[in-house]
Length: 364
Ligand SMILES: Cc1cc2nc3c(=O)[nH]c(=O)nc-3n(C[C@H](O)[C@H](O)[C@H](O)COP(=O)(O)OP(=O)(O)OC[C@H]3O[C@@H](n4cnc5c(N)ncnc54)[C@H](O)[C@@H]3O)c2cc1C
Ligand code: SF4
Ligand code: SF4
Image (cartoon, rainbow, N blue to C red; front, side, top):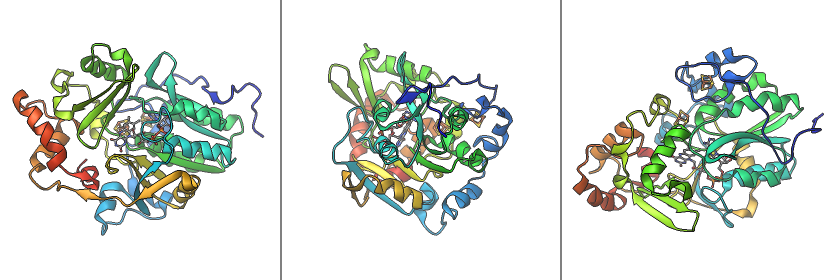
C-alpha cells in the first residue's frame, strides 16, 4: 500500500544521506543509499559492462552490422519529433515531461523520479519524487550539473511505490539498470536524455558569468545542432552565439570534469526511450529502444508529430580535422587555439558545410 500520509503532493523531495567519498563520481545517488558499496557493481566509471546490460534491458546487444547502432546503441526506430503543442518551460517541446505526465495520468506508475530546479538556484538540479501529473510542469527544462537522483529509490520504495518511472542522464541510468533486478519494483520505465558538455552547477555559473553582464537573467541555454548556443533572458530577449565565439579560452582547464570527459554513453543506450535533439535538425530526436519505449511513445498518441530523420554534410569531409579537435578539446566545445579573427568565419561556415542531422549526432 502506498503511504502518502505526509508526502507533499505533487512533488516530494525527501532528505538524503551524505555522499560517500569517491574519485570518479557524478553523485548519481547510489553512494547515499543504505549500501554505498553497491557503487562497485553499479558505476559506469568503475567496471562498465554495456553488452550485458544491453542484452538484459533490450534483449540483445547493439548490432555491429548496423553502423548507427554502433554510435547510438540498440534501437527499434529513430525519429524526429515534436509535440504539436510545445509546453512552456520545456527544454525543447516537452516530450520528456509529457510522457511522465501521461504515465501518472493513466495510473501506469505511482511516481516519477526526476529533477526540479533547486529553489535557491534555477540551474541546480534537485532530485524529486513526483506523485501526480500536475507536478511535472515544475520539472521542465534543462539544469546543468548532476544531483543524487537514485538516492530517492529507497524512500520511494519505503512509501510503497511499486511502479516507477525515472527520467535520467546516462550515468544515472547505467547505475539504475545495474541494480534494477534487486530493487524489486514491479514496473520500471526509463526515460533517458542524451548528455554531453556537463559540468558541476558551480562551474556552469562561471560560464554564464562570461556570457552576460547580467547572468542571473539567463533563463535558458542550449547548445543547438546548428553550432550556436541559444540564450533566453527573463525580459524575453533571445541571443544566439556561434560556438566558435564562446569565451571558452577563459574557462578554467578543469571546467569539464574528468567524469564527463571520459563518459562513453552520450545517447543513454540503456533507456527504454532516449529523448534528445541532436539529430533532430531543429526538432527533437527520439530513439525508441525496446517494447517499453514503444509503450511510452504510444502514450502521446496524436499529441506528437514524428518524421523520418535525415542527414547532411559529411563528418569525414573538410571538417573532419576540425571536429576531431573539437571532440578532443571539450566534448563538443570549440578549440582554445583557434585565432580570434578566424572564429567568426568558421562560425558562419560550420552550419553550412558541417554535418547536420544524424550526421552531426554521429560526429558527436
Ligand atoms: C546536462 C544535460 C546535457 C544534455 N546534452 C544533450 C546533448 O548533447 N544532445 C541532446 O540531444 N540532448 C542533450 N540533453 C537533453 C536535452 O537537453 C533535453 O533534455 C531533451 O531533448 C528533452 O527535451 P524535452 O523538451 O522533451 O524535455 P523537458 O520536457 O523539458 O524535460 C526535461 C527533463 O530533463 C530533466 N533534467 C533537467 N536537467 C537535468 C539534469 N541536470 N540531470 C538529470 N535530469 C535533468 C528534467 O527534470 C525533465 O524531466 C542534455 C540534457 C542534460 C540534462
Ligand atoms: S556515480 Fe554513482 S555509482 Fe558511481 S561512484 Fe558515484 S555514486 Fe557511486
Ligand atoms: S557527460 Fe556522462 S558522466 Fe557527465 S553527467 Fe553526462 S552522462 Fe554523466
